Image (tube, rainbow, N blue to C red; front, side, top):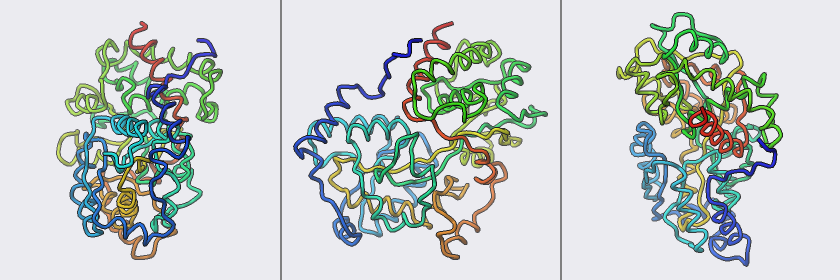
Length: 413
């Protein structure tokens, strides 16, 4: 593949260019939104505002948490929080980009659950308000030097989004059928070849399928330190042949001989729940606890520990530059960072998401909120899951790998 290969943007290039031009030119459109210098200004303006939070609608536990906990907490602060479910975060980003191009000052999106390529693409196009997170009182409870919070898939955060929770790519298996689990990703692929039909992965660009291919890229390259985090055509051309050779060789041993793939992580989960495969994978291991407890997943479900570690990241809340309710959105983002909300969200019976707060910055009473949480019988603690954690590649890698997978694996054989 030529090193002059052109990056395939997730949003049409014309839309990005037009939005960026609008933001940078003549002070038009969203650039005139109010700026705040003190938190009391924010809370005064927020009172009575309605904030529309656009977030992935397929996460039942996440949606239930927002409805049962975050919305009532916002109401106590005088903010009406409305959850707007979307099938894909790109839907929210496209809406914001359209509003940016039209110079909207009071758009339909006030807050977005976002990370990765959607954040990077939006930042490039001026879709996000920036410089506001330092005003949030609860940002002082995070660790400034935490690399997961400073960079989002290689894109510097720079005050353009507030952290919400951390995640770790996790592979789970049925220990009743997998008696001698592998300890490395290469070992897992060997297991799949020895046990044909019992393993598969979602087809990229599904988020989980995409991270599986990035994890495998690290593996076949001899470790994440051998893959440059920033996208380079030369590195792509040098490193990816081994990745796609591995995937082509693996395909005949997959479920349905690799002639078809689960379209989504949810489809893979259904295969695992139905006993058709012995492994599943997720970037949200917290959900495993409930799925085992309610009988959806086998009672013998365990987390596979890989010696080389797995990819970790964080997800965030971003305020569109077109939001007319920026103050209310800031109040909600600050609430979401509070020890009380972070602890509720971390409860495996609620959502089980890993907190972004720095324990050293918490008071004894605040730490006690987390110490009182029940331990999951399925999911190890974050310290265990994140051991030898691998960094995320820059967002520009994602569409390139996804597109190459489609051409070389899905349709190229």
